[in-house]
Image 1 (spheres, rainbow, N blue to C red):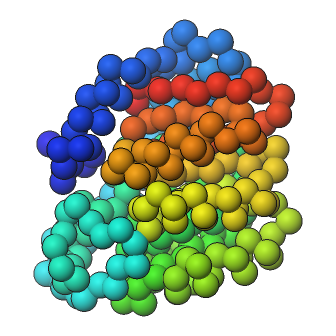
Image 2: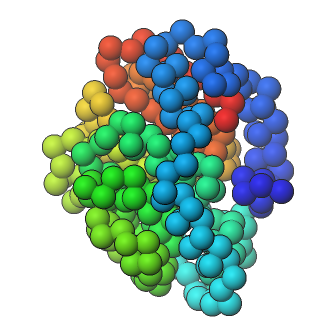
Image 3: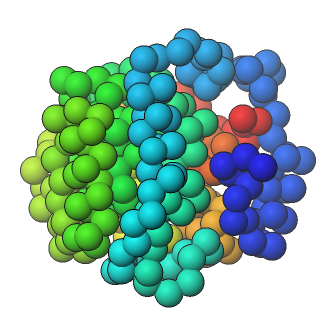
Length: 269
């Protein structure tokens, strides 16, 4: 069983079946948008073995054999994989960290688009931020985590993988995000991976939207996590400022490029 399938509930299984029926454009075939065609061909299906992939996978395997447990403070919508607040580090590494398939995709997306700044909502134990940081060590990665204990494990991840370009912020998104948004003239790359509730997701999107430029890209994790998240995702990709949107089931990606015709793609990945 792959990383994506682990812990899927009945709603997510139904959503995955619908995605499989709707999805097309494998390797870019059939796409009439030059921007999206090149993106799918050169980024989604690129097989280049970047050095960082093996380093991150090796560290993730190390965490997967850990016996450590801790009590986690969850300010979001909870988890389909865990009951209660006690977490096992090995389970987080296996089941809640970003799947390698998508971490590597976002790494390639960053190397392709070259954003000047990167913002993540939801650090967890730091695996996705590590992909961002190692994609370009010259770029600053700001990441927010609500639970101080989890943030401590993320710090261990960043130290082990030598991600010196990561800035950690511990606190609730509603407290930390407005200040981070205000500090930037534009937000180039934002990864939304926390507080998986419809209204919260829309609130964070609308706040970040204030600093979205023509070349900005917003990525949303778990867009089919629940009915509420699917509703939020639909509102987001239909927003008038969004021109190009891509549904890859696990993640959704939106662009604001005014030179592109407004189109929504469900891409087989």
